[in-house]
Image (tube, rainbow, N blue to C red; front, top):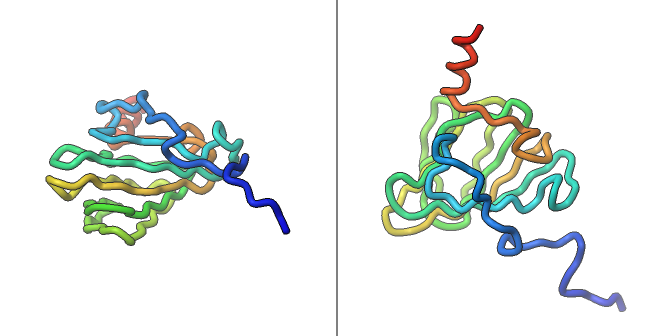
Length: 148
């Protein structure tokens, strides 16, 4: 019989990862606990990122509209109600719902509840980090267009 272990070099829980304190409101991260669970730093991943985010209850907890030119993204709601923006669509997401964002398409998320946190599990494919995925807001794109 194989010895079944409690720990593994291939296993991690979001609680083992510190919240990312470098994410700033002026870059679109509002009232969020973001943990980068699988990245090129945690597992030497080359093309996969997985994270867990908790958005505080109430108005203002959101991840503003942005895009990733080098990665597709998916988001799965574990708890709560979210308001999802992808391209020109806006829709509710509830526990058990999964959304897919094509590469380079603007998207964002906000907590849809005044009383409950919104907890999501999400990931990128095609990049091993946020830096590799690329991160651009509409304001970044406006500034780049003005410089041309």
